[in-house]
Image (cartoon, rainbow, N blue to C red):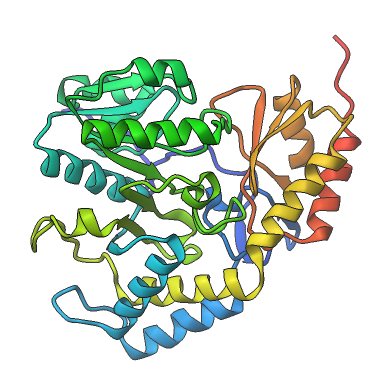
Length: 382
């Protein structure tokens, strides 16, 4: 009889930081030695209002003391209020609450297939939309898609931001077109506003639903509520998660009235989606974003970084607002340099691009620390 191999109680997923994270406050996290780290990674673009913002903490605590949970079998005032506020903020008409970005994308794609009766999706080279099956169908990452190739829905994949390729594409059999308005994992790639307008027109002409995956670009990160407002192109569906509730797990599928009117009871469902804790956190998150002018801070912080990193080892600052990419031919060494100075940044699928996805209330002190550290970096001579 074979002796089972020892395995850890917690299955490893990602390589962890070289320290134990104990607590967070604002734009910093603290390790078990009491050392503070500037967080320009934001728990992977999640901590929109910073770590443990007092208003969010209070909202969650108050809600937990009142009603910890009840499913959609009961109408909840906090859920109704959250729905009204997020749809107004996003400029959409209706919302279905779920639990994650992958779940929001899965449901958006499922609705596109259901409402059009078509069997094919469209997405873009470099796009990353999640690990569920429909989300994998539109994700351009062979490492995670290849093992499930025979179970994925057919997908037309186009180059991102390429107007000529878009105009030449045939959408007549396409149910839905999904894209990240800024391709984060691919290296913070952007497209021109007129490309988004052309994509909207192309979908309208073909009867395909347009889906913006705003799991990272939403909730004020670009200096506007969502990228839909930034680029001036309204999709049929917007998916949101990550910063939606400041770290309380939550996803949302936002839609136009035209889409919502075609759905019936039972087309969508979730036990934990729209739970009272998450809804309370969402309401508090929106209050902080708007009440503390965090969208303006995202814009001004980005402008400062662009200006003050000129002439450094960073040759280009990519992206918009506080979803930024720092291009450098020494990116790997620069990331180690920053980590040694207790500054957290993210990598990307492009080995020359580091990502910044900090809290939207990132402070001037944090910006100075990052800028100073980058300016002090001297590449090793080969």
